[in-house]
Amino acid sequence: MSLISQNALRKRRVELVKEEEEINDEVFSVEGGDEESGVVKETDLVGLKSSNKKRKKGRGEGKQLVIEQEEEMKRLEGFLFGSLDTHEFGNEDGETGGEVDDENGETPLFFNDLVPNREVAVYEGDEDLEEGDSDEDEEVEVVKHRKPVWVDDEEEKTNIDIAKVGRLRKLRKKENETMILGSDYVSRLRAQHIKMNPSTDWANPDLQLKNNDESDEENGILTTNEELVEKSGMKLLPGILEHSRLVNANAVEPSNTVINSVQFHRNAQLLLTAGLDRKLRFFQIDGKRNTMIQSFFLEDCPIRKASFLPDGSQVIVGGRRKYFYSFDLVKAALDKIGPLAGRQEKSLENFEVSPDSNMIAFIGDEGHILLVSRKTKELIGTLKMNGTARSLAFADGGQQLLSSGGDGHIYHWDLRTRRSFHKGVDEGCINGSALCTSPNGSMFAAGSGSGIVNVYNREEFLVGKRKPLKVIENLTTEVDFLKFNHDSQMLAICSSMQKNSLKLIHVPSFSVFSNWPPAKHALNYPRCLDFSPGGGFMAMGNAAGKVLLYKLHHYQHA
Image (cartoon, rainbow, N blue to C red):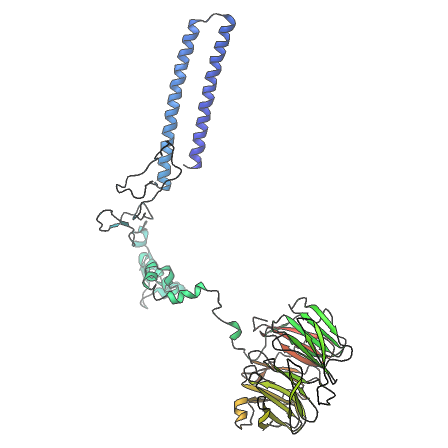
């Protein structure tokens, strides 16, 4: 029952209650008067009885009126909202279940309102139904194609000129067609709409059921939360590098001297900075605050280079000293190691850590390369070049080592046999100054004292092809630093001898990004650079003691 009918019934019940109270008041008043006088008049009793009969008659008529109003309200509600027949499951006769009393004679708390094997029509006015064959029950189904509810008779009488209006000319079937009937106009508009807005398969139940088996595999992707497109695997386009400048990585505590090392931890949230101020600092990088976590001061060693082990457990720190330091991140302990047994090197400032974290290679005197165990921190072997050694780079997961130096050659070493298995000339190089291998191991870049950077294919170089893939001539001073990003699509080259001397190379095309370095932001003298593990951040340390932080928008993850 609707709220309107409920309110009407309540109002009527209130009026009946008031009438009963008035009758009782009159009876009480008459009885009170008789007690006071002690005499009851017969005429008064007769009048009172007649009045009571009239009121009872009126009250009976009022109850009948209420019942009629309730029935009228139910009829109107059924007409407006549709009738809801209450049925019981399992009733073979299909009789409508009214209010069935339980054992105690009370009305049940709930009832079932639908019969199984029955479909209710969407519209009560639909009369075009098909009856299926059934032995016991007749199943009613809704006809798919219903007749139009309303048809406009004026469509058959109206003529429309489709050649007059430009946007209606596409509805013509012939070039000379001009006037068409309104019904044809409507049908052509519908056809044009379907043509421009094709229906989707999921909106068609019949087609969906028909192709259900074929689309199970395709629909399976909707049950997972995996990315359908791996954005980080998209190709980096040449020309313009989309980037934005963020708050300096060491803005909380900048250095007052040169920054010689910056490197991201493998978790992409921790950044290491080190320089000649003898402080080793760690920052939590978020691009907004870049909070400093901790700093350590080395009293007797200005830091020339600091590097995480690839497993992220330790930091190796070197300077122009006979010893080096190992910092344990878990224990927050700093250990002094050296001098190395049997060696007289006065500087261990230049080194590289193997990708498997098992070995550390230091550049020694007179072309020697010192191999130190990561676990014992002891010398386990040496390699000897013909000229002086100036740069190192590991390859093949730490099984091979590349080196270059004063003789203009690039050496390939097998660390399992401790022997050189290939030696090749770096084209146009007199004095090699920097080396870097790509993470996938397919390429390596070699920088020289003249500012030339050669990019080689390793396999071709090892079989004797000495011509590089690309000769990069964008720097005019000695190349100090080379770095590939994580997917080998970008190469950073820099020279610390000239301001803003930092270039970013698009490796697939070997072209320089035209908008780097930024025109509005001075880089000062760049000293070191690193990309975050996911490629989203790039940090660059300069001679002014600042670590500039940039967001590379092509990469979605840090």
